Figure 1 (cartoon, rainbow, N blue to C red):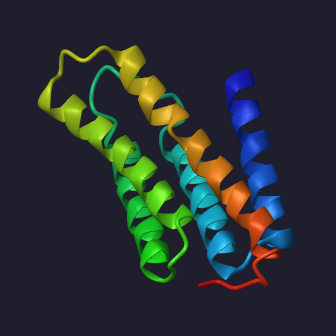
Figure 2 (figure 1 turned 90 degrees about the vertical axis):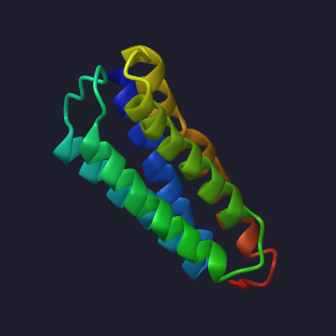
Length: 137
C-alpha cells in the first residue's frame, strides 16, 4: 500500500510542477500520466499479474499514443524518451502474451516501475521550460 501512496505522491508532484512551470506539452504529458494512473487504479484495482492484464495493456497503449503525439509536436528530447519508456511497458505486456511462463512478479515490477522514469522526465522538462523561454517546440 505504501508503494501506491509513494507513486501517487510523485505523480501529484509531477502534475503540480507541470501545471505551475511547464508548457502545454509538459502539462499534456502530466495529465496523460495522471489519467492513465487513475484509470489503472479504477479498472485494475488488484491485478493478478499471473496472466496478461488486458485493462492495463489497453491503458498503456492509449498512453503510448498520447506520448507519441506529443513527440511529434516538438523537437525537444524528453517526449521521445517518455515514448520509449512507455514502449518498454508495452513490450512487457507483449512478452507476457508470448511467454506465459514469465513470472508474475517481474511482469508486475516492469509494468509498475516503468512509470518513474517517465514522471522524472516530465518533471525535468517542466522545470526547464521556463528557462527555455516557455517554448513548446
